[in-house]
Amino acid sequence: MIIVSARGSIRVDGRSLANTVLFACGAAAVAVLLGSFEAIALGMTNLRGRAAANVICVIPLAAPAAFWWLGLQRLGPIAAVAVRGLAGAVAISGIALSPIPFLLVAAAMKEIPSSAFEAARVALRPASRLVRVLLPMLRNAMVAGFLLTAVILIVVGLTYFPVVSLGPVVEHLVGNF
Image (cartoon, rainbow, N blue to C red; front, side, top):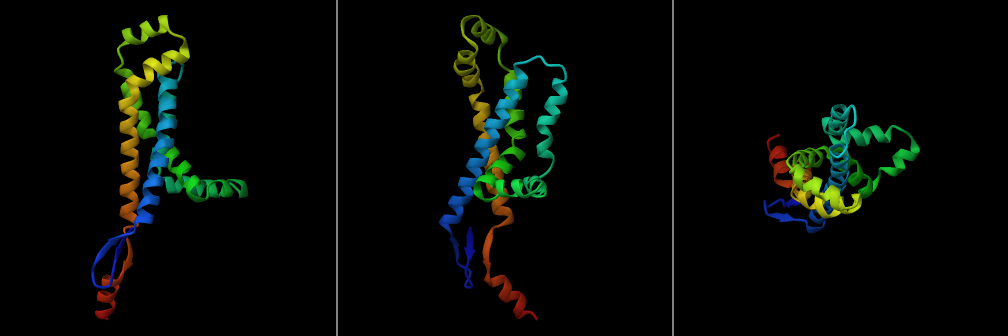
């Protein structure tokens, strides 16, 4: 956090900044894991209703993570215990922002040359195909999804909670009365 003293000097609290970065990276990792899994699962199958499934995967982005958090708190005592602390915040924020990596990975899957994947389909088992061919082709989209999600979480965190002490502002307001 940014701490402003009464004299106007600015100092960064390293512990709060580390907690913010830890939260953002954890939530971004959850978002990438969930969003990439959804995109790969939908991209590799020919299911009826795939367009509806794509819309369902993007729905969590419609509301901020705080609304999902409050909704889970109202489900009862078991859910209220499960979503507390850093782990709960990471899980809820990761789920709420999973559409960002989902959209990036889904777009990258559409750009994969079909000949490369068909050659792998003939020569490799399904698990090897995924690990040795598909994931390396999607790595850039996954990294972009991670970075974009982490930056969004850090910027939002610093936007809403930027200043711990508003000494000069309070002194100015009180002095004007």
